[in-house]
Amino acid sequence: MKEELEKIKDNTLKEISSSAAIDDIEAIRVRVLGRKGELTAILRSLGKLSHEERSETGKRSNEIKAELEDAIEKRKSELGSAAISKLIQSEWIDLTLNSPGSTSLRAHGHIHPISQMQYEIEDIFSSMGFEVLDGPEPELEYYNFEALNIPKHHPARDMQDTFWTEDGNLLRTHTSAIQIRGMEKKEPPFRIVGPGRVFRYESTDASHENTFYQVEGMMIDKNISVANLIFVMKELLREVFRQDVKVRLRPGYFPFVEPGFELDISCLICGGKGCGVCKQSGWVELLPCGLVHPNVLKFGGIDPDKWSGFAFGLGLNRLVMMRYGITDIRHFLSGDIRFLNQF
Ligand code: FA5
Image (tube, rainbow, N blue to C red; front, side, top):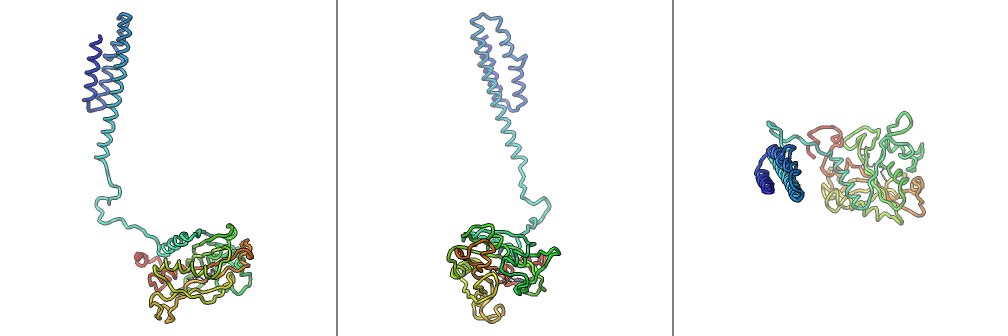
């Protein structure tokens, strides 16, 4: 019986290793280890043997059974992996390829030039430690005017013609509303920028839209001066225009800053010599700014005796116009694909 056992083992192992299909292995398993299998029959007949022989043959039979079961599992898994690899090879497809018959790549959308500029400016300010904030487009009168030191009936309200809603709210006329919301949330010192869409009840022309984009910026800390403001503005412009830009400040009136300025840049088209774009002056008006008025700090819950800051409001449409030499602001919202495809 011992010899018979070893023969079954050797033959079965050979068959397992040479079989090429999982079904064949299953057939071997049934033939040898199944209920009526060759090895099972030997195990069942152990009762006929002497006590000593029974224990020796029984032990060996169980060892062989375990060895064959292992070999069967191993071979099954080898054949399974090989089948999957074969399937992957034969059924592999490149989903990024064009469908059969198509002649050109599917057209991709792309980001609007104003959004491109917005993201770029967000990156520049983030690299200088500014946090990017958001705010609502429909806004309360309080955040758009009152908290910015522009009380009801103040003539400065006429500087920004406003779309009012029937319930007495408005569409924000500038991103400065984000300043106040930012001040309410944050403890000084802090630096924030707030990009967004703004609305003015204005008739349009080549340089005025009723819907346009601004980026508000604000830095609050101890002893902030105009020098800090100029440095940050020059850094921003150097990054945007990829060259050093000469700036000058002129006095400008905004109730929420004191002193307030208009920041001009030396015309990049003519190098400051004078041309049509800068109306022969050599300078282009770019962004209003100033040191935050103490009343505005108080509205934002910040003590003006301890803290000071600068703020600015950048017109994004005009910045993009200057970068690409676009001569009419109305192109941006025209939806004209011939214009948009250039960016
Ligand atoms: C303001 O909106 C102030 N909130 C900016 C500010 C912030 C000043 C913080 C001081 C401190 P102004 O109305 O000038 O300011 O608008 C700012 C910029 O928005 C302008 O320089 C211009 O680039 C752009 N802008 C204004 N009106 C229009 C318009 N109708 N169409 C397109 N761009 C405009």
